[in-house]
Length: 311
Image 1 (cartoon, rainbow, N blue to C red):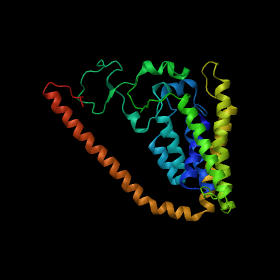
Image 2: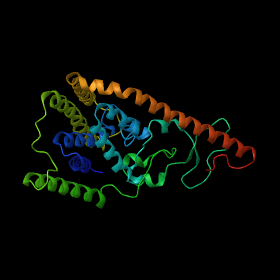
Image 3: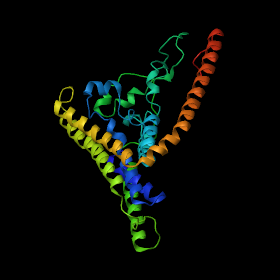
Image 4: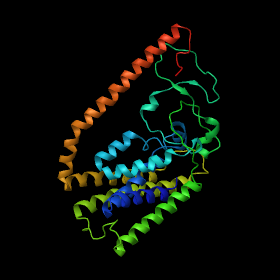
């Protein structure tokens, strides 16, 4: 999906459900953040292609959880971005929702044609059922054409990026956002609260600095990516490394300054910590129990001569 589509959808959702200009802005900024996992920083094209970090590194529940701790509305925007990308097909990568945990799985039982590719291994407990559909990804972008077969870690949808859906969502979101703004200005119904007091310096200064960092990563990264598109694979130059480091520093400064100028946010975060820890324990406990059950069933099937990896 295009950058403009992500941002407009986020701002439209912010306007439709919240109506406050600062929340609309935060959701829109959050909608831009996940695409920072392109080959913008210290990754060479070879490293980027090998590890397939786009739609993985910043498109997952762990990253969304980290953003939520910074600001829930940033996390909402990032979730909308990730959800929109998740409806795209394998030709456009889909989304690796469970990264980095999916990278712990190294083997699959069947390839993309349904052919068994490994013998049963009693020492290996975790398999993906089959490999990624490589033939589809080879028909896509240049950095996917040499894609090495790997376990099917991503989720896909039915929609091709850049097509009617992408254009329709952008045009529809823009039209609805403008409609809400006009109706609010005319006094028909106050969908967007234009009379709200402006942000004070404790809010807009950290937001401005952090947003500048995000924008720098995306803009400078896109310039670098297009300039190097036809060159031999190599790591980023020193200039790009420095600008990337500076951009990340701006994001960090914005977060730290925001916490410093808004001490109530630190108290709110501290109050969430016990629930966060409890949630993590519940998730990992359930995952461990399910893994043990699955392993035991696999052993029973293997002893009986059946397929230990059938579902």
